Image 1: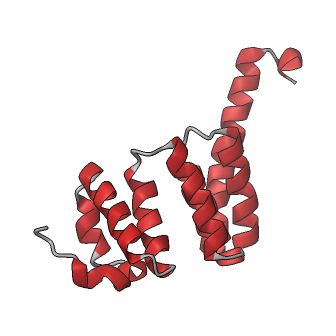
Image 2: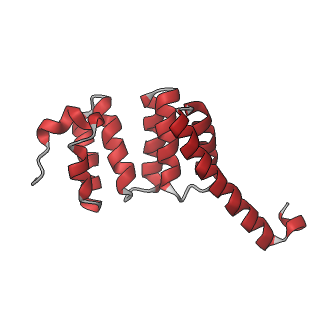
Image 3: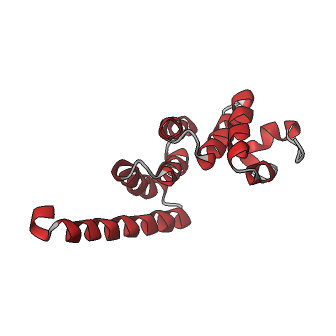
Length: 140
């Protein structure tokens, strides 16, 4: 396809396709069409693994369509590629807390808040982190 279109035209086409797919992910999330969201987010993560948000969207959909264990595995893979991404760490904290791994949840949350401090306050309102709320304080 790139040879027929020329490299610049192919790149523009792929960029537009990816942008349209990001919109589809948001639409499918709003419609709670988790299987469709997972398919599209999975393609985005495959095509652009440098964007951690695609893995977060994929894990979000897979958690609802399949299981928290499957979603957790996706985020662990994302963590390996993006160890300093606060959103990956925060979401891992949520999943770990829900899976009963409270020490690991606290460790992931600590990493997230070192990178982006606002996540500590957000944690106090996130129901997924309720199992570790008693160990959190705004000042710590």
